[in-house]
Length: 286
Ligand code: ACO
Image 1: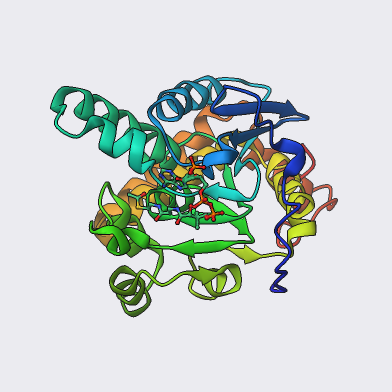
Image 2: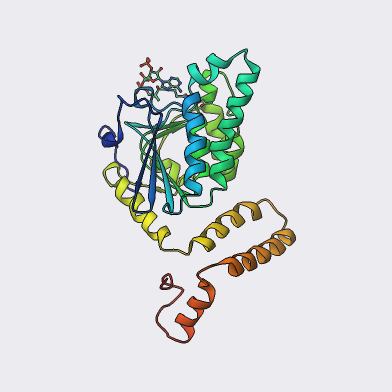
């Protein structure tokens, strides 16, 4: 999984529909929702219409029972070139009301919705990934990637704001993070994986297949437990040990009590009584 491939030119071309005015494409296929940021001519820079559409799309997918896993990717040769300097920043300079509405909506989809999304989310980073695009990247649970990353804010006179510096501090160590925050130097997918910014670096031509494989693994898990495990991890990471202990035990009780599949009892019986599966090596038969 650690191989790196420099050929990006054919990435995701099938997803690129430059003639479409919809800034976000949504495709549901076999339990997986593929969300494509769709402004390939602008390297999927995040514009106001894209922000507002993402809020809607994520809200819709979270309650769609047919969707088990969400994948976020970009059309053409970019995941996203970050916030749109023209439409997101310059166009709203000096318009505080418009800016507040826009910035709040952006925070909503980029981390408030995505970080605590009730289903697994995979960022399939297929190309350029800069600045503000780091927040949705880091908010996703798993990120396969192949691309060029950069905390490029310093290169054009701002700091990694929104919540980018905070998000980066969550997944990167201080020395790596500070180096890239201060230099704005771009780095490749292999480096991103080595620093823990993404889970894996895969060659471009295997990216979609590997993401699908991962989504299939997640689809087989008990969704009630998956949702609770994810949200409980995010919250517990910010608590004291004492608080985390109490909270996690309560969350586990909640998950077991509300699980319509009664997964814990079923799995225990399959292991102890029927001897048909080994929990160390696989998921129980659902
Ligand atoms: N904001 C606004 N427009 C953008 C952005 C952006 N973030 N990124 C690309 N575009 C536009 C370009 O202006 C250009 O538009 P045009 O065709 O109307 O002139 C088009 O997308 C293509 O961009 P090019 O620079 O021509 O494409 P290239 O493939 O040579 O380079 C790259 C791609 C490296 C991504 C370059 O566009 C770039 O550096 N973009 C800015 C990246 C960045 O620093 N983003 C901001 C991070 S900070 C933040 O998000 C808060």
